[in-house]
Amino acid sequence: MGTVSSETRSPHTVALVGLPNSGKSTLFNALTGLRQRTANYPGVTIEPLIGHFQRDGRAIVVVDLPGIYSLSPKTEDERLAIEFLHGRLPGGPSPERLIVVIDATQLERGLTLVSWLARLHLPTALVITMIDELKARGGILDTEEIERRLGIPVFTVVGRKGLGVEELRHSLLRWEPWGIPLLDISPDASIEERYEWARELSYRVLHLPRPDIRSERIDRVVLHPVAGLLIFGLVMLVFFQTIFTVAQPAMGAIENAIGWLQGLIEAWLPEGIVRNFISRGLLNGVGAVLVFLPQIMLLYFLMTILEDSGYFARAAFLVDRLLGTFGLQGRSFIPILGGFACAIPALLSTRVIPSWQERLATMLIIPLMTCSARLPVYTVLIAATIPPVSLGGMLSLQALVMMGLYLLGAATGLIVAWLLRHTLLRGAKAPFVVEFPPYRLPTWRNVLGHTWSSGRQFLHTAGTVILVLSLVLWILTEIPPVEPPPETPPLEAQRLQLEGSLAGQLGHLLQPVFAPLGFDWKITIALLGSFAAREVFVSFMGQLYAVDREASGDTLREALAQAIPLPVAVSVLIFYVYALQCISTMAVLRQESGSWRWPLLAFGYTFALAYGMSFTAYHLLQWLLY
Image (tube, rainbow, N blue to C red; front, side):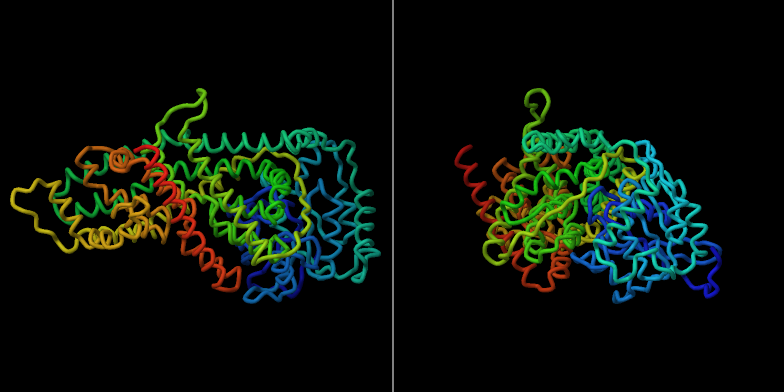
């Protein structure tokens, strides 16, 4: 291909476009060096992702667009991608080149999309992914014939291994505009004509002697209406058991390291405000949250494996009938599942839902899914108050309680969705079509990359929001200074300071509001602080119970076990199952719904649920146990 004479030294914008689940995000990571999330179901790329690299002294900007099927959008994420391709996206550049990504194992469908994109007349290259899987099935693809028939460069890549990526990157600035129509396909061709053209070309260039019988055999079991649901339940049970037990040694090591560091601070620094801040404000605050980093990383590690293996696409199909009972559909499963990691990307991923009523109902219940920010709260209270007994020699009672909290939030969310779909958000249920990718072994590079990225985000939160709020709480516990009586023991003097400080006064002032739930003033303060970020609860409790820990030499979990009875712990857990305690979630819900009406509704109904269910659980346990 010749060099385009109009090239300049300005940055070049390249759009990465293709069907959902075609390998776009993996190729994007390989091209730009970023570690963006990849997954085996449509809709993982819910907004353009931007990466950069240099080639021949020029800056190349690569934009990874949401997956599309044609140039006629049916969902919000498709509309966003198509508007960008036409240069009509507000604030977005116009693409100068296209990289069209198609899956070698889904060649006919990918070529149908190519017939639409030819209408854009942009310098274009075709990238065929999953070529290793095609060869594993004994398939042969004539890429030279494809290149001859299309009139554009064709590359084969294995993005997960980086094969073929450098050749693509090296040739990127040498593609010519796509100025001729695709054989008999004109811009006005019908959908049927485009399918027929793609089918005929696939027949000529692709030789596939045997189907993927491995996936078919597995699907006979995994997608069985009874066995499939049992397998799904078993997978989730193992998932929670692993999160709660495997991470414990690493959590204990971090806890011991923080305790050792506190000992050094206490020994090296003289008594005073500096030592007080580092030991009680910083290490008891932020340090209490860092203990849960292994659990957070393990959560994302397991979720990435299940996503990349192709299992979650099947899970969406399995639960489609269940979701339909509550007025939703299988596409809602993807955002709902994402809510168990973080509500913000989950809300954005609802753009794959074509029905506005179903999309809004899904957005309004996502806050009830137990996000990773709740995990530290659950773990510290469960470990403190639930006996670590084993059931049947395999499953721990603590892991079952945690799984029960996750299920409680999800089940309540479905009930709320049913109520919404039969009242405020009435409307017909849209049909659901899901594409099953072949089963794949996840690559360690992607799994570990995504795990580290998620852990880094958790550390960023700990080093910003939680650090600032911990500093604020520490200041509130230090003013005004309280003068203890003469000869008061040091620990007792610290208790008097805490009770008489602004934090103590504020806690006692607000505690009557939450007294019916069994919350004391310390829990009340920690609860209110966590409306900025749920993890703050653990940070605040680490600071507020610092004196108790110093008196006994216990860890935070051991101190809470002594201070918080089981009915109170359960009440707090139930409150966190339901309450919408995330300002960022409110802001994104406002952005996606286009009105403050819906975020305020979400906040109101979740707070009412949290208060009512916590009240019920606390008084029921009080009656049963005492």
